[in-house]
Length: 140
Image 1 (tube, rainbow, N blue to C red):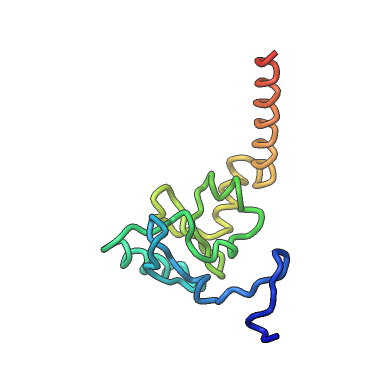
Image 2: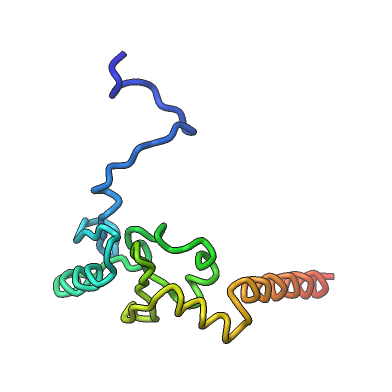
């Protein structure tokens, strides 16, 4: 059986073409409108400026979000907000994706405001537990 026609299973590791990983899509997700290789955040800013001259980009699904360190994912990337991060740990941030900030500066923000990223995550966990307990009390 030829390699390209062999049967695949859902748990098989899939190799994704690197060019696909670099794609920036339109806001509606229909069109490939640009590319970014994840190396330098300034290149992404330039590419987004170019794209925005003719169409809206999908900022919520920019390429190479996997460059973002694990401790800044999920709740932190939504709270700060972080849109993309390059391999040198520079991130595109801000409500309007208009600031470039280092990972270290983001961590320092959480150190100052909450005593660290871990403390911020713990605060959110406790707030969630409290909200669930309140909902349970109110449903009785």
